[in-house]
Length: 330
Image (cartoon, rainbow, N blue to C red; front, side, top):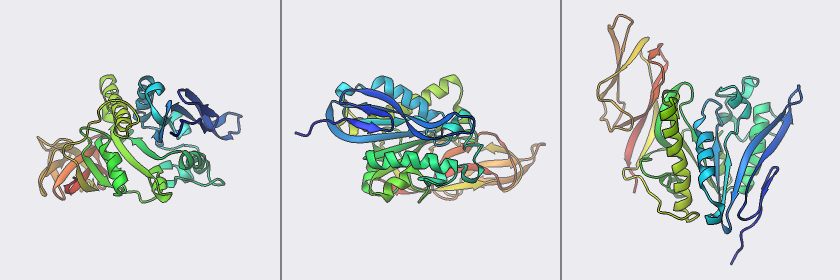
């Protein structure tokens, strides 16, 4: 029988049964501070695959780091088969500024559009490259945790590349994660990089500005940590029974834009992940006196999974994300 092995990533090297923290070195800044990516390896006592979790590739999305922190407290390497690698914060400089991207790097500001970067590129590209070199070599499958960040709230939603392995991983997120859509970023993200090298990754969304009250933030982080453990259980890496969504759908994302400037007022009864019919009213745009200026309607049968955090909009502003459902998944 194959034995568990030591896993090394950057400065971290974990023997079977160990939890070890470390970093992936990138460079130094002009003032001498180091740019490095923190990570933790939870290495099981038994052999198995490597499950890699990414958080905060966008620095205004703290849900991933918090979920990793919860999972780290709860996953026992002595009960684990294989390895759990967690990178709570990929984009450290953006996270330190609570900003979507690194404010010092305007040319490659959004790391989730330029991944896996370049070894000789702009700073964010170099950070992405350093991360990708290790993930591509070590990980068997990965999830990247996102949220609505500072601009919106996103309910439980997943993007897949439509390979059977990717859809399987999406369903392994557990109960309530049935809003599964085709990847809207064919390149530029960790999951796209995994697909390019013949491996599996997905992008998951939950949380954002409208869920940052202490109680709600704790709830969202708990849900994401539960999914990390549920994935371990699905792949027989950890004891316990996995759960699965009962209503998984296949769909495509569409961003609905404001047809007029004013205040976005949702239609009564509209809610996240609630099935809608094409033409159903989503919201009205009213001016500051309450006069109706325009109406947003469902572009297809489907559901809302994302909504802007602030109701005031200008013409062409993003209002909500809509999942145009094409059918049910087996």
